[in-house]
Image 1 (cartoon, rainbow, N blue to C red):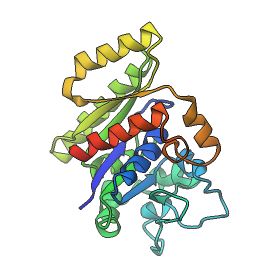
Image 2: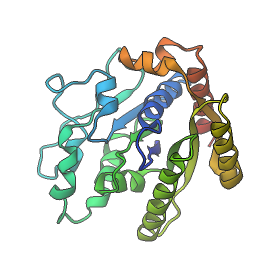
Image 3: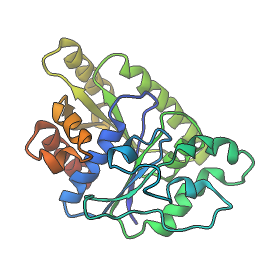
Image 4: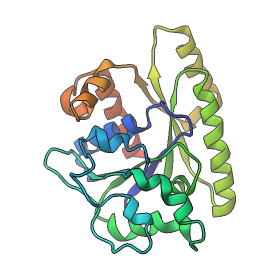
Length: 251
């Protein structure tokens, strides 16, 4: 049974996709078998890895299309450090399509139980919107990893995801485990240091020890369709994601 991590935050621009891809690459370096799934209609992870409309057919959308004949949606390519399930622009239409479908909150979990048993880790890059896809991801996960940018505006997104987790816990009748990852940390700024100290004070052991710094190498790797660990393994960002992978591996 794989360990399933939902990477979620209802505020955009906090490093969800960067975390999904970089952590996936780092876990692969630890000799584990990893599946990364892009569940966001914006398809940032999909485009990052050079999956474009026309060069792939099956996608995460197929999980939620109840009437569609099921084919394999997992792509394993020599140039990828992990297996990957791409997103699709029509993921945005899933909410309406599943409105009257019984058990619509469990479709992803059922698919994972059938198709993902050979993996050690499954990383779910979640959409920011509260809706059926996010709820599917949270319900299917063992751990919700919440990336939080170290600025004061990002703290609002933290409250939103916590409110969503509380609602989910009521419907699932179980506790939903979560840990927060501080991202885009700039040690040079007082504001960034202050937010990090606040997170440590409030969250205690619910905050990963690993802190992801600002690093221009993330953007460079993205422009080349790769992860930072593939192109710049000695960079600050890459080394911290490797530390994060070791933390996750110990959980």
